[in-house]
Image 1 (spheres, rainbow, N blue to C red):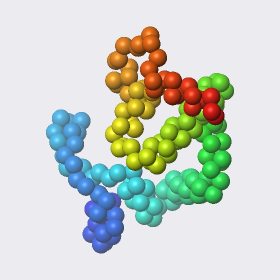
Image 2: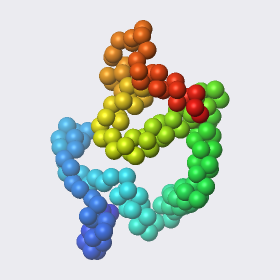
Image 3: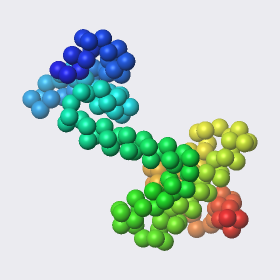
Image 4: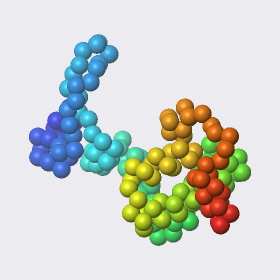
Length: 159
């Protein structure tokens, strides 16, 4: 009902971000339901004039501020990522390997961009490299290393 009131008060910016989808209700019937993407939900929350929304608004402001700091100093983002992995219980060795893998992936994608390699090829190649796509899990592992594996090892040696 709140969203309908917002639409009636001519807040077109928000109403443009809201769509109605028929979703299945617990009673088994489908009803038109107000839906929005993540950005739209955040904008709606920001527009709610209620003290109950204030803690969430403060959290949004804090996260936004942290991201701006990370833009100014990208190392802060790396530190945050490491802290999140530690909080989830990952071992330091695993975290280092993951961070190194991310760094290598960035190097590769930057090089591919320079050489105008098409987007689909990148995802296919990186997906089979270990990001865990369906094809990589189903495919039978080869006992003989491929050219790609040799290139990957050379990249690791260079870092």
